[in-house]
Image (cartoon, rainbow, N blue to C red; front, side, top):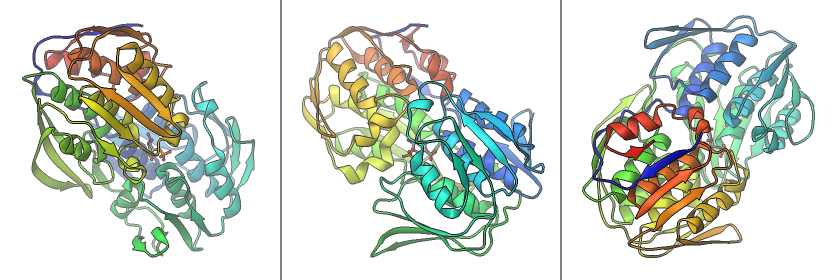
Length: 429
Ligand code: S3P
């Protein structure tokens, strides 16, 4: 399915952004590992999350939807089973960790063509060091056999929350020391949620780096969780509000965990008008109402250590940079080539097609932005939801419409994207 975004008037109103994808996966997986029934509200209902729901049911857990609330209970985990993770790297990597620490459970993991091209040894090598039996190489399909694991001290290079989370979930079944060290911290939702489930995790910014260690309480106990709106999905309406003149858009109850707000900090430095209000704590996470008004943007220079806090937002940051007159530089993007698509390549091809100069200089992206962006192109999404949404965002502020070639994958993270954007007045269809 193709979709077209047409330039038009200002975007106005409240964007109804769904629940955070990272937190939704974790809530379901920890709920399925915990004693008792976990109640989740605000769960993202998207294809990636349904892959995790299906996996949990296959593994013997129980997941039920009651109106707005989802109830999760552990069953005795069972195997051998086959688990299809679809397009979701988080489902595959976190569930491999959870299975690895469950003695007697044996699961064969597979995924779609995109997921089957993504590296998995970053997870399976540390799990094997802990004692799990793994069959397969760096790509899916991979079989994981759970057992009583030993401990590990793992240096997580490059910083990856999926790898860290897989190790922490695997480590819940052992009493041995389990520590992950990162030079720059990756998102910490697993650690925050483990506290909600009554487990202890210590985080220390020491001389060796950012150190995350499991404590002695490792048996998760069911809890109630309310999941905030996803800042990675909100990024599309909020960047659109910045670049479409006269816009004023609000997202209520957005997750503003500082390890996820890198895009918003950079946008502010570029001249973006972003106001946070009503900051509060919700299920251990910081949440706020975020209002963005249109503003002229100046180019940015993003350093590699800033990237983990905005790793999924680079495509839409690149769109903001296209409208910032001058050269923007974003360093440290090697990981972008390993996401749902080669995002660095897809962003450069898309910007170039829309009349904006963009080049990769090693793992640095240089974008030569302009006050006016031509658009008027067909953009190849490479089957990547965030590439599709990023270029539809560009089309709203360009001189001519932009068409994306495949929009189905938007359903992996933000199924109501088109309706939400239309409700603000955007011409997408
Ligand atoms: C995620 C971590 C990030 C991110 C992904 C979700 C998570 O990946 O890109 O979309 O939920 O832990 P890495 O851990 O590979 O950096």
